[in-house]
Image (cartoon, rainbow, N blue to C red; front, top):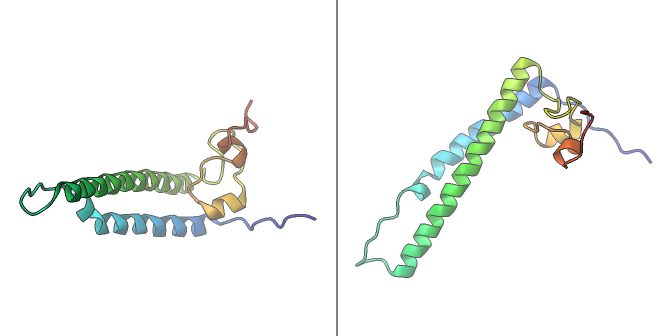
Length: 123
């Protein structure tokens, strides 16, 4: 039994998805800015465990911001590849990235073979 193949996404559809995700990332950054602020030490009103909890929450917020920043860079790079006519091709082997993979993540830069550590078709 053959698996149905995904319909290829057009550049315009991918661009719209990527721009929407970029807007979401910017919005998430704005909403979480409070969690990244320095933790103030108010010895008289906050106990040691509360301060430790606040510091841990700040560290998690900073790590989340770093992940969003990395994703934002991938989205921007994908938008640039669309403009250059290079979107949808593996950066490692040059083959087309599967349509289903691009539908799931339009910022994907590798085919599944190269992403999983295979040699792809380069060689």
